[in-house]
Image (tube, rainbow, N blue to C red; front, side, top):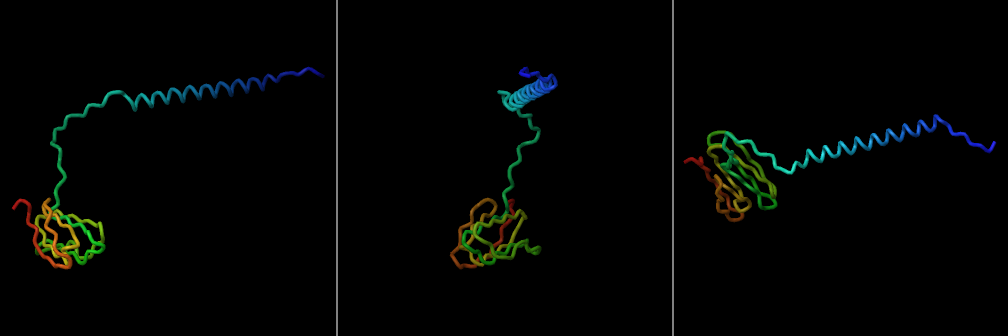
Length: 139
């Protein structure tokens, strides 16, 4: 009764589990190495030559930024055409338009920063109403 017999099926299961864990670790190591090798080649990939020139970002005909807490009524329209904006703006709000020519009415020209064809327009006085036309940049 003092003798202990080992279970051959238990040892086989234990050995099989050990082999499975070992195989999993080898696969993880190989996969990790392959991933690292693909991410770090040591050389920058050459850029393919471009047959088209780099395109520059188009400059808006008109850009308006509200610099006050509230910018009273700002109206922008295409001359003789659509009204693009007719509303108040809030601090930090910006709008850009790319139409060839625009009519602008600012209820408070001191509350907004206006850029015409990439050039900053002088800011008006607080409370001053201002109306102007932004011409086509080609003119």
